[in-house]
Image (cartoon, rainbow, N blue to C red):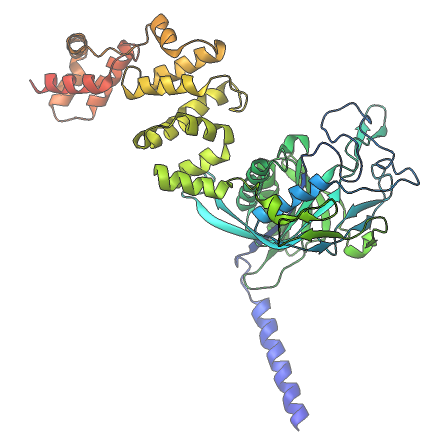
Length: 519
């Protein structure tokens, strides 16, 4: 009798669950889940396990040692500098650095991996359990910046593979082993992001961090930092669903676009009654779509085994006693610079900048350097930041010039800004002078302004005469203003600015114009 009752209860419970799922509205909200894996190439002179030069853009197959080419009998020797940069990065990301870590062989067979395996740290990595804090702010997507964090599962050292070059016309593939054995740190994040904008913001923050540390150039266009994104969809409150992996995304914008597209693709499949296949996909930037590459490998496919030619990596976590065989972590951490999060806080607290301004300045390291070199009076800090972000960058972007390669000096910018604040020039003239300085980097700003006759007219008698001429030549606007349509005042000022070639101090002009209209 008891068994029958229990059986009846179980059937009733199952039916209730089935009915709840079957009758769930099709338009019930889907939740996207994103997790990242990032490979950052370490900025060292030599490779992870060999003495070959670690460089970008060298002659094909010119930076390859016998070990990189997997010649039998060659053995790996761990690069100490790579370990130090890995420690710095792990600490900057609040990770627990492990006193002992070890190396593994990860087997897979590609032409650009001569040994048939990659040396990595899958089972006992350099560091675990970290977190990255960052701010998400994409104008057009977000009205205001908001704070976000992502947990880090582990950070491991590993070697890079070579590069396959495909010739479509000759229908053959060639291999460049210059990159084989280059030092990488792989940072594995937990799946706790929600969309492409958050993923892109995380990557941007990570780029800024590794650049500050000197650990990686962060130049995604050179492959120095590559992103794999894992994307899945689920109903709110449900466990994680089947995911797809988007491999080797090569830009911050590409991360946002690839994740956004994959979320839309999976949502469309699920809402159409289909199912997601566990696969590896690539991001086609030209088509702005993810494309299928292959079925997703699982851990068993790689046949991990301990690396027999490398002893465990042991670190001294407590004291500053350093030796040839054991690295002192406290000594390494003495070289820790100010991190981007601290820079933003400093800008907001000391210079009273809005969070959006602080984010934009820190996101452009060379723009931030200009700001620090120029600012003397804290009262002018917000104005300087605003002009740098909105006017200076506008000119550089128009000319397709990066702030990093701009030849205009901080001193020239400071002189120009002083002229703006003294109302000797306006922002239109400021931008014109910048254009001239890009052509003549050694010219003095004031000389350029005088040569071009761009100094503002501040003489009130001259401005009064010009105001009278404008009022005389625009009787319709004057009558409308006197009839109560005060909005036409801006039109009158616009006519005056155009007539003077934007060379008037418009604050003086507005005051005189208003007084004349009241008569």
